[in-house]
Length: 290
Ligand SMILES: O=C(O)CCC(=O)C(=O)O
Ligand SMILES: [Fe+2]
Image 1 (cartoon, helix red, strand yellow):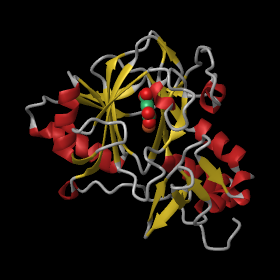
Image 2 (cartoon, protein in one colour):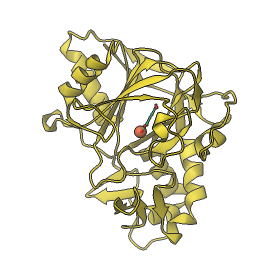
Image 3 (cartoon, protein in one colour):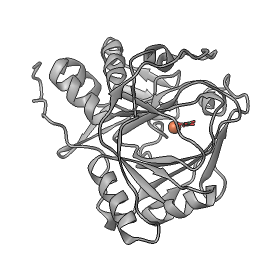
C-alpha cells in the first residue's frame, strides 16, 4: 500500500453536476471554487516496509490527512484500520465496523443521505455523540460514473482564517453549547471546542444541526470560509483516505452510477502519538473582538 501526502493544491474549475433533492450547499458553492487535489507529493512505500506505517502515522499526526492507494478490498481497509486504531462500530456498520456506502435511495430520511446519490455537505462523522471517533478511514470499492468526488476541508485552515478575518465569527462558533447536533437526543456542543491549547471541529449543515441565534447569523461567513478551504479529489477503485475527524470535515459531490465506498471509524491507538484536533495559529483572547 502506498500513502500520498498532500503537498500543494491548485485551483481548477469543476464541471456542473445535477443537483439532488436535498439542500445542496456543497455543490452550489463548489462550482469553480474548490481546489482540485491534482498536485501531490506521492511517496510510495512497500506495505511490507515498516516505514509505510511510520509515514502514514507521521502524516496523520502532522496534517491529519493521508491518501491511500492499493487498498485492495474492504478486508484490507479493516486490516489497516486495526493496525492504527480501535474500531468504533456505527449504526450502519456490520459487526466488524465496516460500512458499505452506496446509493440505496435513502435521500429523504434524515441522517441517511449518505445512502443516496446526493451531495453530502462537509461534516464531522458522528457529530451527534459526545465523543465522535477521531479517525475516518475510507476506501473506494467502485467509482461513480459521474461526480462523486470526495471533498475535504481542513478545520484548522477554516479556524485560522476566521480568527484572522472574522474573529467574532470564530468566537461565536467557539461558544459552548451553541449548537445542538443530532436532534433532541444528540449533543449540545459547538463548532470549535478548545481543550488546553488544542481545538477540535464539529459540524454538520443539515436539519440535524440547530444553531443558536448568535451562531446562525455567522453561518454565511462559516460557509464562505469552508468553501475557501474545500479541496476535492476523485478516488478510483482501491484508493482511499484517512483523516482526523476532529480536524478535517469531509463530504462528497452528487453522483450517478454504482459508486461504492467503504468506511471504518475508530480512535488512534494511544502509543502512536496521533493527537486529534489542531493547534490554532493564534489564540483568541476571551471577550476580545479582534
Ligand atoms: O460517500 C462518501 O464519500 C462519504 C459518505 C459520508 O461521509 C457519510 O455517509 O457520512
Ligand atoms: Fe461522513
